[in-house]
Length: 217
Image 1: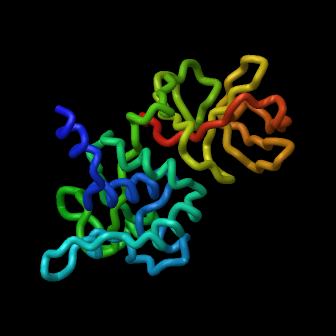
Image 2: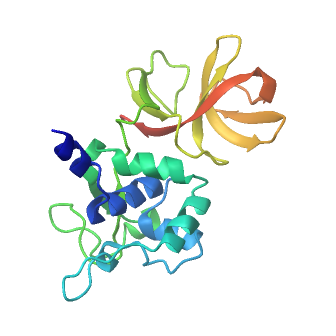
């Protein structure tokens, strides 16, 4: 049993690449988007680069991983946790820029992805200890979220300007908003609900902030 447990924790080719896919997804990017932000060739993390033409496994370099972590505002400890995660079994889905979706040949007759231009993005990770789901009730967050929608919130995902977030205020209130600006002293939040107003919170008021990584819409 001990030997089996150790084997399961070994670093493998598939687990390393799956972790990079999850890192990209956590940053709201495709693998090629993450590579580009990291200052690498956009194809560095593409599926086609993970195996050589003669079938040998190609591993990402430590330099490329380090640059990807910096680009995603993540740490080596967070990357190690991504390696250990099994949620979604590393599953990815086809990704295409919305502006390109109307191009001829982007979809086949059944409405499924077709042709060139598609990349891949990992599904949101749902089994790490810092991820949880919240069910929306009422109409306060319309038009962003409807009554009955479920949002997946990750405390471990990197947060940047423009991300939708959940903020826990020390006094007990929990709010959902779009991050407009974040400084050492304050958070500036844009409302998700049509009847809500912009809000500024002092850092001392905030217990925690987490990113919304998925919604059941």
